[in-house]
Image 1 (tube, one colour):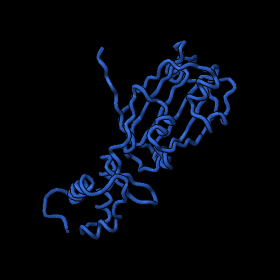
Image 2 (cartoon, one colour):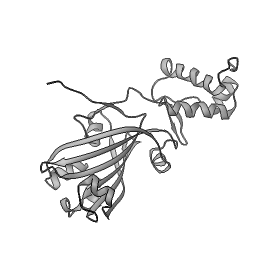
Image 3 (cartoon, rainbow, N blue to C red):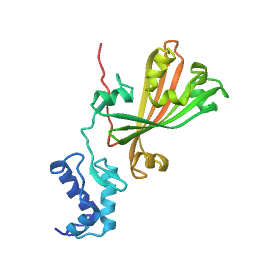
Image 4 (spheres, rainbow, N blue to C red):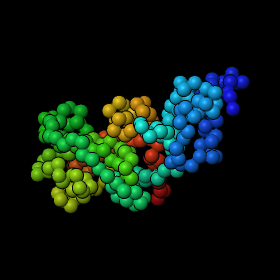
Length: 242
């Protein structure tokens, strides 16, 4: 089946055809035909096919994994309820998935003006910086950069965070009772470093999340900046009227 009869750009025509197949024929998680196969099937150049696949990825319809191929995104993906569930580890377990956390960095830094304002600490105060890659069933889903006030977790070491969830450490090891966690999120695109860690293309759609966690003294005990794959997260907020 060759394309080109319409004035619509060729890659855009291919986007329409593949979108239709994704909606009605292909199953979530299934491997898409390769660039070469699509090129031969529709009589298009590899460059045109590549542009179409990039557009499908931007729309969140496919996931491109380096060295493996292009897969149909699961858009029924497990919903995260922001009003109730803020633990990645517990959320993944509740969905029957196997969570994995890789600690990429753990260090102690001084709070600059921006961090001091966001965490309610003094400029120059010592804070822990924790960078983690969060995965489920072997698939990288989220890069988290977490900041904790040293004064609340004086003896915290990297091994504490390699085998336990952060909230388990906060609440059980350091007896910080969490009162609430505020979370906001917005659409963005993957920057090079995060794209590499998440195994997606640079510029692919992501969700940027900011979480601020308070203890019962109304002190900020966690400030986290996360970048999540947009094809794997769907958020739901429940509003109740009293």
